[in-house]
Length: 88
Image (cartoon, rainbow, N blue to C red; front, side, top):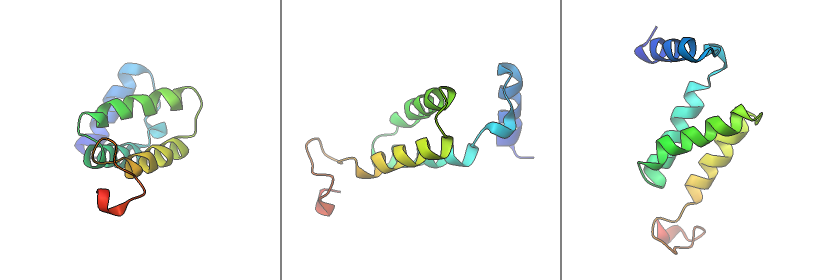
């Protein structure tokens, strides 16, 4: 087991959740995408919003894919055109 596995298991025990239902790679990938393509403090907030959506019944893989795509299309500068590759 890794430290991440130990942490997720401990948090799940504390919150009465099933650790097998935690999509750790998807959450980490999403947090990376937001931190690198939008802004670093957006990563934990986005992870929280991801959890809210999943808790309400959304499919984790779908939510992660949609939010990663949103982060990938996010303009670097306010008002930049996300379709313009020179805006990155």
